[in-house]
Length: 65
Image (cartoon, rainbow, N blue to C red; front, side):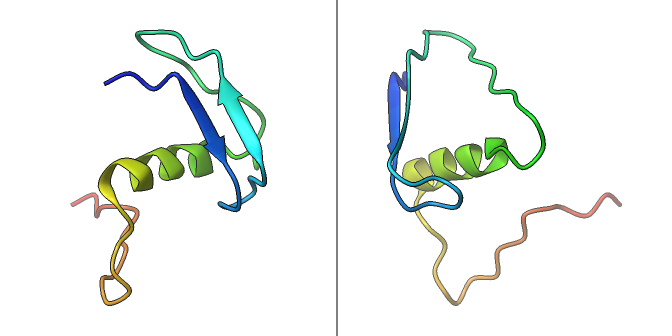
């Protein structure tokens, strides 16, 4: 699967935003803190695998040990 373009409206810090020009292969998303990099990743994850049910506890971080 190749993602060529992403349009986000009303997800986290994004409101009617578009990410385009993604190349085939590896794309690197970088920017300063609080810029929305993790939110963009979470958006892609939710679009591919769905949103968790309200009854499910979302554990973003796994325990180290």
